[in-house]
Length: 102
Image 1 (cartoon, one colour):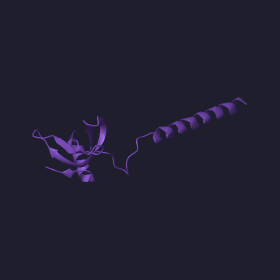
Image 2 (cartoon, rainbow, N blue to C red):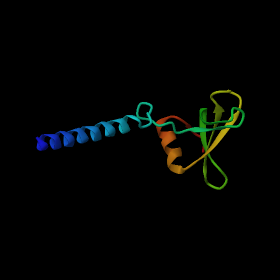
Image 3 (tube, helix red, strand yellow):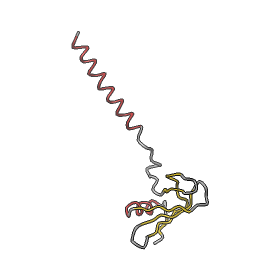
């Protein structure tokens, strides 16, 4: 009788671990058709982070850094800039999310 209770507890704990693992995997952030949102910025007028840039153009600064410039997609008025790493800039250009401006 004790063995069956121990086996039942073992399987119950194993199933709970599996269910917890699946819950954690489903809570991962969603990716849009395999592409991440690469070009987003902070709009000063809307005061919102993570605003998608409309028609972004990636350029180079005078010191060699990469910068994405575009228009806020929510208010359609404010110019938004975002400093980027070389890798993120190249990914955005190759995925077609931004135009190359340098």
